[in-house]
Image (tube, rainbow, N blue to C red; front, side):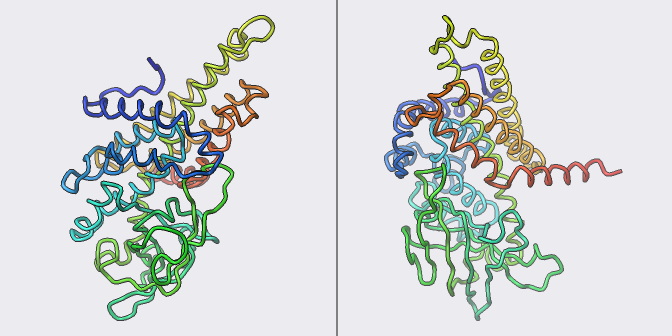
Amino acid sequence: MARLAQTTGLTDIQTEILSTVKSFVDKEIIPYATDLEHKDEFPEAIVEGMKEMGLFGLMISEEYGGLGESLLTYALVVEQIARGWMSVSGVINTHFIVAYMIAQHGTDEQKQRLLPKMATGEIRGAFSMSEPECGSDVAAIKSKATPDGEFYILNGQKMWLTNGARAGVVATLVRDDLGAESVYKNMTTFLVEKESGFGETRPGLTIPGKIDKMGYKGVETTEMVLDNVRVSENDILGGPEGRGKGFYQMMDGVEVGRVNVAARACGISIRAFELAIAYAQQRRTFGKAIVEHQAIAFKLAEMATKVEAAHGMMVNAARLKDSGKRNDVEAGMAKLIASEYCAEVTQESFRIHGGYGYSKEYEIERLMREAPFLLIGEGTSEIQKTIISRGLLRDYKA
């Protein structure tokens, strides 16, 4: 029985869900992940298995055909999936950010129309905030909505869409010049629906192709070009009343996303530790297993401590969000420490593997390419420090 990353106070249903997911990961993801990753092949069979288990509707209310589970349950599921293959967790991450945003901020019509199909995975969601010339500087986005009678015309270029090709709805943040004093109140989120695939997937909307990446393979990451895309005021998240609220809606979704990235980092760390402690007991040097050398034993002790610390902070951030309390600082802290520790734990596992860690035959090689993504996804470590420090100054103002 694993000792690390155990969560106290779970319900019987949560325990059963996690047990089912862990079994699925061990049998259906880990044995195939490295081969699929090296081929950069989308995990169709794995995704179908997740659909059958209802994972696409995990956090969607039962009213709309989902399981109605908490962010904590979702985060623990993501942790297990990322333990198997981080790319698979990416398939459902942005999907759930969009579903969460619709559930929290959408109109009744938007919820009734989109959430039931999202719960089954028939429609998948993508999240689009970043642009080629602005990553974390959201205020600098250039994509724009221009009013045209009862409609709006969208123009611009968006970047780094996970699920960009396969998504059926893209939560898209654009400038909406309302004349508000704050730039952040001049932004609106549109639920842009499209067909799946590459090329022109609705009039004026083009998904050019898949971006080739160092890691995070299998799942597609794309650009999105908006060239006079016509949408209506009913496509605004929250309807006409949602105009000018896009930035704040997106930030609400990003808090969920940061808990998710922390969970993914925890999953990779757990797997890197599992590989390291197994290899250290098998590999022999100087007449004994390398785990009997104090240098290796101390590495394992430090790795395990980092795994445990990151998991605890991730769970705390998820529970705060579930309770309805503000968790921007805690989510930032969890994302910061989990992603940084993930990079460190993975590298130590790589070092324990020695020369074999550099071989594509060993799983740790894949993890070494996946871990760096978490240092930048959903905001860099420096952005997390900015969020944390601002929150601390807010609460400890002299």
